[in-house]
Length: 184
Image (cartoon, rainbow, N blue to C red; front, side):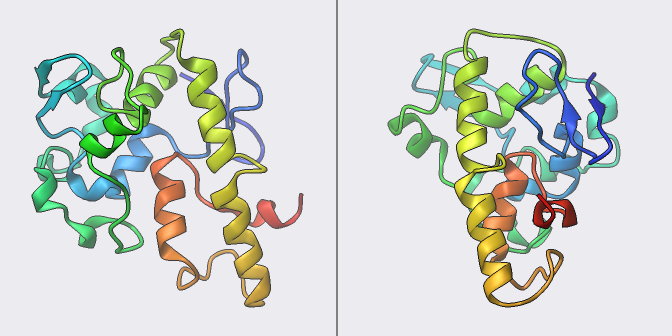
């Protein structure tokens, strides 16, 4: 398992520019994906049904997280459990149509992140990390748009009334804005 640096970001020696600050467990503890991420799915990409895929990861990841916060159907999305109380994201079908789903990770980016965080490496690592960097990395569009909006409103990084949708999206990608984001 990766370790955190002094800025509380995870360090992956083989990919030093990949610096999420939330573990998969933390992402799901914060109620991400409205409780629907690990729901049973039919993968158009693999032409196969999947369910209980999350059970391949350490039991400690899911301790004290109710199963309805992991495997609820998409039409039962619970924005009230999302940390920022908003509904963000797209359906699996939209992800598949956009070409974001690989055969190795039919659930998408977070599925890949769970594997990567666990130490598994795949041919998709560089691609997925580049996607993360473009969205949540130091120059990521969501991260920088949120920083700029906070500066424009002359408030603090932890004023959660500023763009809860961007914050929730960043959280889905393993990142929460910190005070350090304003010092770099």
